[in-house]
Image 1 (cartoon, helix red, strand yellow):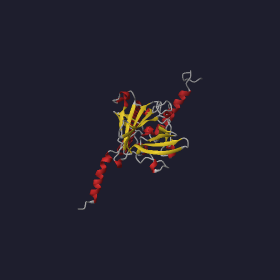
Image 2 (cartoon, rainbow, N blue to C red):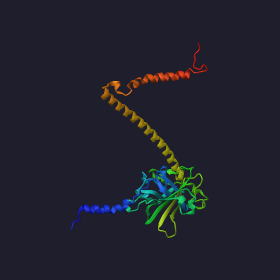
Image 3 (tube, helix red, strand yellow):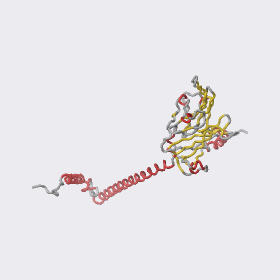
Length: 334
């Protein structure tokens, strides 16, 4: 029996529905965690940061991460397909092997760590936790929000990114970061962050934020436990937009201004509509009752017609009062 063509179409749509339902609806201007809203949209755009992850003399291994929390990353203009993450990626890690001796730079791994890969049934599936209300005692002493972004897959291993946005009112959140925005591969080639310059042995200050350093740092990348089947990128982002009173303060100011603005507009509209209604109704009444024409149509037409002269006399009186005062009490000398 031949199956109707539209039956194939319907079955295909039904197959796609679960994937579409799990598509990311991440709005970085309104990240909500524990009924607290954070506006992270000022951090939009592609930011690149790097971390030295190992040394195999004479070469070193460097992980360069490009991230855009608000949208998918753009393809670099001069990139080969195998040297960039696939479409839909929001967090991309590129591992470089760099030899300072001959200035060579070889890409060893391109890792789509997080993103929306709906056609492969791997959505971003973002989850947010307010640090103050976290079950962790250490987190409860912090102010900010933690985001967990999924969807990545590399070498049959799941990937995810955990980003802690920490409140720091002195930082915008873009300090020390390189903006990529779909530029050349050379721009993303290598960025050495301040935390790499610890004591030189790969530990100590490694993975910790340094005063005056980039506001975004890579803390670690790899499995959280031995034998885990998932690799995790942990990042820390210090910004004033992670402060809970940041958006609330702005919202209150905007709310009050909005209220008074609407009050003024409504008052003006009421006065205008009332005046227009009075003039129209009065003109109609004068026309039908008295057969009035021209200025006589308007209610109090004589007063309206004399208004320019009344205003001129009033302004002269005001000027005269201001200029002619003095100690004589308004009397002029004889």
